[in-house]
Image (tube, rainbow, N blue to C red; front, top):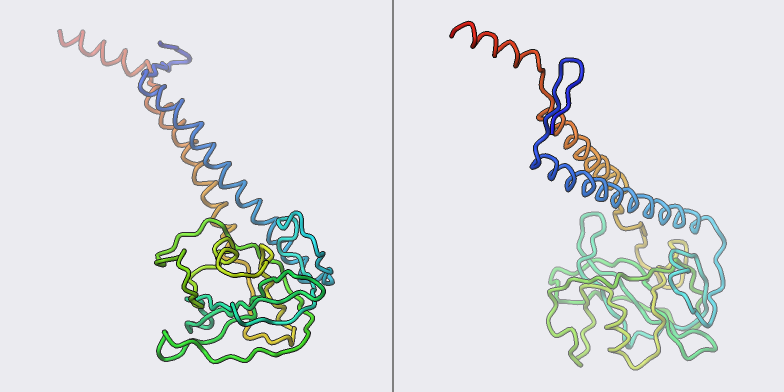
Length: 255
């Protein structure tokens, strides 16, 4: 397959065409995937920021769609129950290792509980020793943001399905927690508001490192690969016909 135009000859190879047809759509698809991830994370960030400024919503007794409440600021009244309190390990604050304290709250006028992340506490010199913390008794109004722990969890913990209660957890696994306790627990966690005085600790809440700029960078990178594939294909397929003719004439003269 050859085409000539204004002293140039377009002679692509089948191998080059095959690589072009495979690589360009693939790179564009990967670029769009990263760009869409950045857009989604930007929407989450905007929702999070607006929730910080809005008034707290009363948490309904029946939550049919917890996903719709992600990062919403809510308020609920209840009493702490430390029987099945857990400590999330490997939490860092100001370069210090510690725990997040997650305490069940018995919802007022309900048989349900919800988990309240009360914030960060420092670990001891011996990491195996749990920190001594105080939990206020009585009724409290809890105000905080709804957090839905990820269901995609990779852990090196052993015996995660053991019947022996272990208060130190590596990850907040809601499904595992609900199966491990004899109480009815709602499928989300409330991150206690930083201004609340309902038994909280250090609460410098931030969204996980969403890396919106990184996703945008990856998107442009994949789009760049796509453009580079096209340019390389054209560079290797287009040749000047004049140079070829000159070489033929010079070869003829030598003969």
